[in-house]
Image (cartoon, rainbow, N blue to C red; front, side):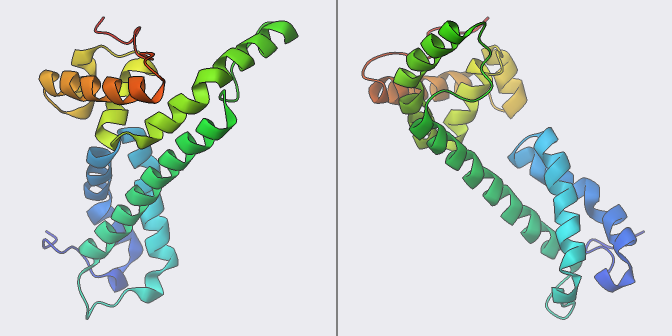
Amino acid sequence: MIDSSGPDLKEGLDQVFDAHFAEIHRYIARRLDTDTADDLAADTFLIAFRDRHRFDAARGAVRPWLYGIATNLVARHRREEVRRWKALSRTGAPRGWAQEGHEDAVTARVAAGQVTGRLAGALAGLAKRDRDVVLLLALGGLAHAEVADALGIPYGTVASRLNRARRQLRKALGGVNPLEEAHDG
């Protein structure tokens, strides 16, 4: 059995991966989501392999070093998410919206551009926990109970986060409630 600090990096990266991958994956999944954790946990070990020359066993065990790499990747992922929302706030409608014809495309783009930029900016300004609730309801189409399950929070917390987010979004959009359709189904 491997001790709590796990194998030394110099013992072999395969052994380090086998000893710590599931734990690192769980940590990232708790902070973000399982799909993102799949990618970021793999990236954690790619970075560990790439930067193995920087690891100094005299300064500590492999396990905390891996957690540090994973934590930095989670922070970078969150910063990129906020940057995407801010960029969308400046550009208008998201790419990839399907329209039937040129006239429909132009009409949809103009209509979306009137609100999408402000909405994306407002979403970027929300606390991450509130933004997650809004996006799960509005983009994921989840019901309140499903959001609670997805985020591992009580049902009432979903309602309070959504209420706070609605107030902030409504204010940013000049009194329009962008979540009229996002209600418990």
